[in-house]
Length: 323
Image 1 (cartoon, rainbow, N blue to C red):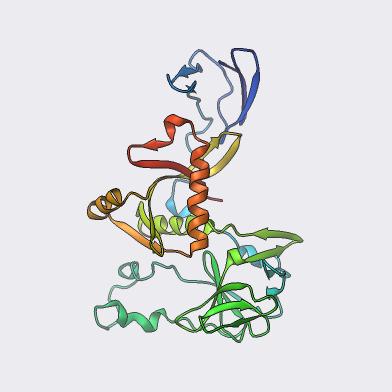
Image 2: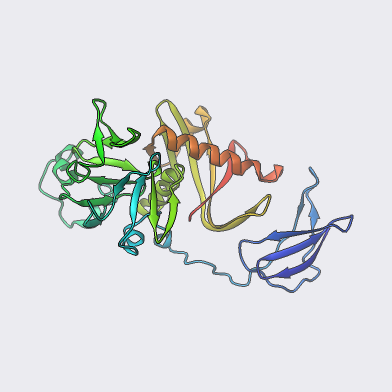
């Protein structure tokens, strides 16, 4: 096996029978093919390895704060004043210029942990978190939409003609009764982005449920540089180790992530308990839809890896796109 050609982000290789395969690379590499660009057999399952030199030692801004904020952000929605958010099931308009005059971002979900950085002297209240309840309560006005990483929030009056509720506090599409979200403790309607679709500049966009967890992992890294997250859903738990961020990777079938996170994960109770005792672990709860989609995506990506790169000890290896 040898390299036949290198051009920007494309590598062509030939096998023993002179067949040629093209591999898309996540970054541009030096195009000069010399003796150091040789494949070495890893000694198992006909796997081969080589190392390439990238054109730049700094591909992306290394700052954690340069990580993307997610999808369907305030800036993205403001770029088209005629955008609309529809029910994924029946295409009923849920958010549009008819009921949305103001867009605002939700505060960080980790605001309490950041309190020490905001105040020389904290508000003169008791030590426990319950004393800060009045600071947690959001009071958006009618026709104001608050944008979270994977959801929208607004008052019942904002959604009075497009959504309704039932006794179990689910928020339903008024046209087809599909569940769009839940009523919050502050009596706001919280609508999940993966239950909706975005119409912007004439194009239709959907929000993959697994992005709910991916964006939360990014926010954990941004907020407190934590690298261990216990992802929970009802009785299920998955410990995720954010091994590296903002890297490029190409998988089997030329599936390429320009910007990705390398994640190690496990559902072993023994490993989870050991990590909880030794590491700082952020614990986050998610809807079943998001949890199942995220876990399935990790397993699917792991299946595309060479056999020698599927696991490290007790941890299973996977990647997820940042964008």
